[in-house]
Length: 105
Image: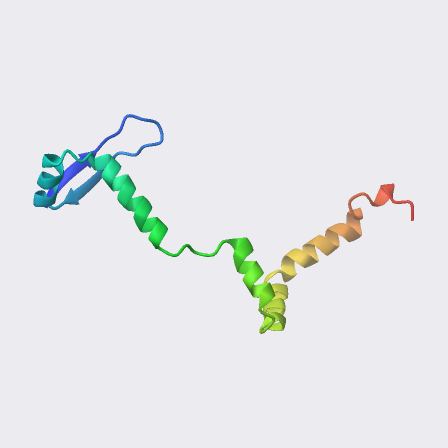
């Protein structure tokens, strides 16, 4: 293994220190393969092939589409957020709801 340091002066690039197989590095140099471009292309390909974790909205959408366990999730959510809900309710009791002074009913 050979230690190789990639540097790139362009904004948005990071200096990287890595170890690479000496023979592989020699072959890449003989083939005039730019290592920075090869590394970026390889990382992009690896990320494309790897399943991405679900985002917050997609995760919520899947849970909403699956009613099994919905009541249990609701109980857990209420328990986890009980202090925030109580704090918000106290605030509303003391200060009123937003725009309440503008209401005509």
